[in-house]
Image (cartoon, rainbow, N blue to C red):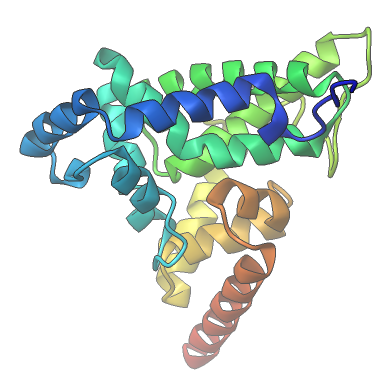
Length: 248
């Protein structure tokens, strides 16, 4: 019987190898001992094994992205000097990377997987050295997407497009925040203060309404159903309108 070519990210050799590697590593003595060492210095990493850590880092029943991303942020702080922390961080963001691989059209799926994972490894290193206020899971997804799409533009041999749009292909990334970035952050902070909503809610409103990212993309990055984010945005916008009306 002829082998069926992979159609989805989870079927690619690279992703399957990463998942198999993680299965061997997650409850290994090596990682459990390292976790004990990490936890002694950072309570955000106090987990019995890798299975518990990744489950916590990928939770959906959290009040904010920042709450869940504490684990990923702690890993990234250690990543520059600890290859194991970087590998665990890669496992945390792998669901978002698989979603990204599946949403790109063009190239062979094995090639897409290789390019996305390679870009993500570079982005993880960059995020570790350049901390910011944006939730790290979203930063990894968005910056990996930009890098892969820019590579697609440079590769003239085959057209590669993102399913939704190419609005950010030309964005220089990573780099110092420009005026547009600064204005978005100022708007997020204004909405947070004046609308009396959490920063995560204000960021969700601004990024999706300003066209920086779609709800579907943000949901993929956060491992959530898009409708969940739409409901959160609706509630946040209602709260902001009520708060602003009360001050008039």
